Length: 473
Image 1 (spheres, rainbow, N blue to C red):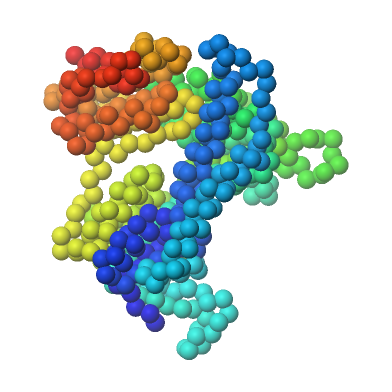
Image 2 (image 1 turned 60 degrees about the vertical axis):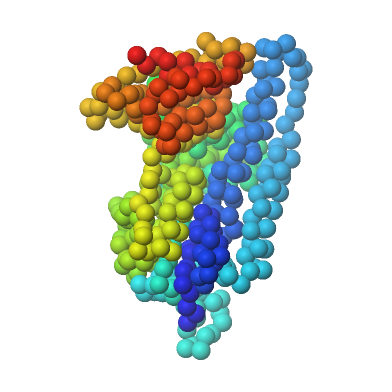
């Protein structure tokens, strides 16, 4: 049984901890059964944004006539788009793995693992018998970090399992562009991928049980986004998908692959024929194969690992970070937590509680969305008194130049101390504009006046932030 100072399970943000600990002098093992780099590099943030940039280019071309640039026609080389993404992500992943293989510390293990004791982890050895005649190899360490991420959650729908549906994992590596693509679910994954496929010419259908798309956003953002998206694509709100039927007869006169049946609360039936079906109904933690109960690690009702303010699990010395914890399912959050977990592993007597102040998020659809802090509906529920101010992009110089007539910025500010409680943006470069607010909230005093007193370049798009902030009395 090989002993380590630290074992890290997961080669995404967990890799940062493993590398830093090895440089600190610890003997480290890192376990990654899939491609190196984790979900973000291989099945999430990076490939999706590479694809979405192609969609953004296509959208600019479609609207170029508005600015006096006439493009008679353009074509989409779907295979080239996908190949570009695969080459970039695969090469980066391969480089990471190559570096790990060439290094003795951290030591890379590429097999699926599970706990067989409090601090013991076992691997299948693929038929090789060990000295004790068992077909498992076991390693142990006093400190362990679990960073196994998440995977798509699949709902129970009649006929779904037999249909050969796809999730975001497969969508990012499709070889053929769907003519008709139907999404089950209307959250951020559906809205980002609908923008990609729709902008390239696929007919899009989104079936969502809620009456708004991205319903967890601020209510005004959700309402306006739903309005804008509904003008582009076929949005079916308030419907629950009841059954899926697949057409397996290649000689059939029917040209579709999937027949989807959904029903709303009034009993109205919706039927859609589609040649591809993408399930995007949320994500669940990758914990089911770890046998966490053998280690004394407890999970909550949704399967996420329970941790304290130091990211330590219910078993002393074992920590967890990222999606598998479920606090915020963002890569930048996992990166933040990895810094704290590293400190708390190395300096056990000087643990630091995680500071989640001003944790932002963005949705890279069209229009783009970004947000931080409370939504207006959350403030009402909590009974917190607040000021509100909104300002449209189109009433700024740059907003008018780029013809963004739907975009706006919304501030929510505490009535007593003028602290920024929330900021929500929909429109061009929302994911960039939000950062001014993040700096004010996290490293400044958090007061709205820190934004209004800042000189903003005219006529930069950031003026919309300044003007929205100035609307707070």
